[in-house]
Image 1 (cartoon, rainbow, N blue to C red):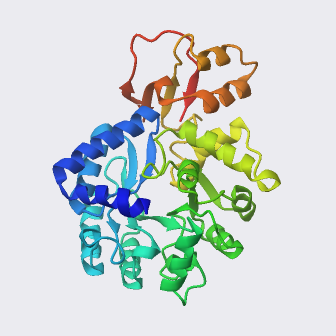
Image 2 (cartoon, rainbow, N blue to C red):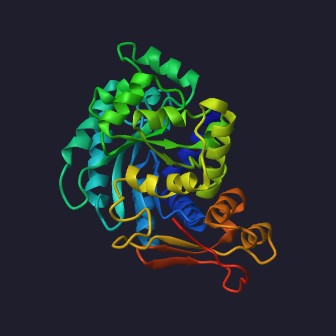
Image 3 (tube, rainbow, N blue to C red):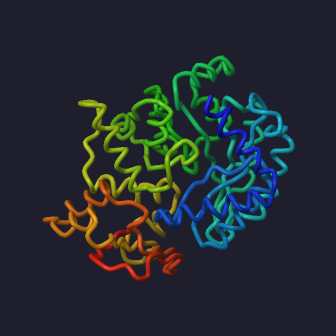
Length: 360
């Protein structure tokens, strides 16, 4: 219902390139202000809007992987595209943007629910056409196992598939350059297959809570060897902040009781930084501040007299300070953001107070 009444009507407005540019600027500004330097971004159903997103991303200097979202059934008519047209539009966009600066292209069927086997075959054709070059092959992203109703509908639409994952995997869409969003209700054999393929899962705890999707089985993913990183899913979530997503991930595992993973502050930092770099194939470049990597970093500078500043001042060690950042930190506490050693934003030039450093 939320998709039909809220998300899809807004997405349809992106057919207007001028409006798409306005939204892209606001979106990328939100990422920057929240301290997110690198992101896999669910694009638009319209090629002109995807062009605008990449243009604005290039201007801001963020590391963005995105692409044309394609569907050929179920959604409103103005968001649908025939498989042949989707393939040609994707080729054109990928040629123009993949590997250009910090930008990369992701083949993006919206989800199996809105794509036929013909569309998924076209997605696979595009994915496997470009395997070389400085940026390597294209990326793949889509949704999987987000909620039980969706899974049941996918089962009806793909009666010959062994599960949700198989709707993608049998077309060759699941591999080391694949990031699958949500996976709240996986089958054990799907976790085994995701791990074997080297794919990653984007865990979006705030969105899962807002939509009542369920409690993410983090322990089961990790036990199976699946790489997991944090996502905000801002369409259904409540903002861009990865600190908040880390805190929500902690809450979600607490709610699972004995079945949940016990997450400490260092675990949340790993999920918010290096895990994302690993999922995006960028761990040799970013994800931590070790020697030889590019300087992607945040300067976190809480306001003097605020709750976070007070707690940090009384922190007994780094673990306490880090826990305070996830529990109490907000976008307002981020003073500056660097990408590749270049400062891309600077907030509150007159701010005073404690100045602990944080890395993204």
